[in-house]
Image (cartoon, rainbow, N blue to C red; front, side, top):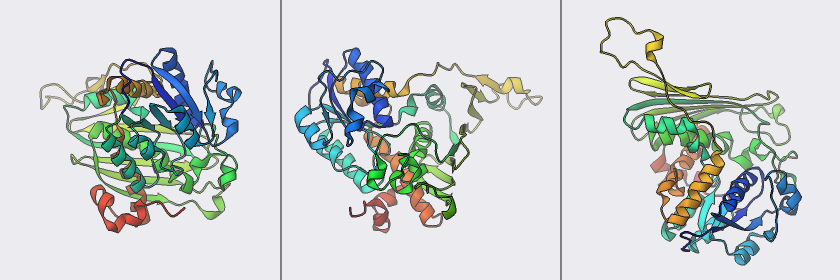
Length: 389
């Protein structure tokens, strides 16, 4: 493993699509602060690597000696990065993370780390064996409400969390992968296609799943049912289900509910979360964290009025969570201490296993999937492995 204590970390970014450009913007700021040296940029499509294109998304960006590559092998061998940002569609990994980990290169992998659990386990095994710093892109742990809920629940007994995500099939920022060249959607929005995305619970709902884990701890089992999209309502490869309901069981006995929709022609989205412990509940109201509970003499002589139950919590201003997760990753590398990160690659494996198990549950008529069994049993082997290319 490379010793980079106190020095700028040499970082290469692989994948300059929507999310890769957001990471590059964060790294560009960290380079200004002297914490990073961007040594290479890679993308399968040459048009995504021009200075003019990148500067539209990264203010002030200049290539100025940063080499660009359309081949990962060329980038890896010539740039010799100390850390890699792997930001590619989740079904298109080809051993990059395992190879880099074995060479002692630190890894930031976007979520979902793979659509195939066996492939992700191979990545995790290589990372653990090498002892490198590695994380996955769960930047929502850096949101103010997420932080508050995490701290607030530390000394309380959680019982239930419900996350509702109302979305539309066309929902996503600008995509940059030339999907049509690889048999995908013409509009590049691969997140709407089941084969490319692993369906919406895996591609998007993994964020809400990971937040549940940040508040409640690891997930023990998953059970799910989806509403399939009608054949006559599939347009340009957009075949992900209309609606999803997933129930998670946590190691501590609590329950989580993830409800999602991906409707077409709606063009409106909303999100709602409520977190419950044994004596109250916590929610977000107009950006502010508010807890509802009674803290007077018990039992009360009279039923408390609503104002007595409402407890607004100090809530920091919103921040650039992509910058924050990148800063934590770089600081961990510089100090050799992963404790400053809110998630590691290893800890994130439970989030990935949970959403992949939800897909398996749906395909097996709502069977409850124990995650330990899912990870190891031959019963589920066909669901874990990547199909032959």
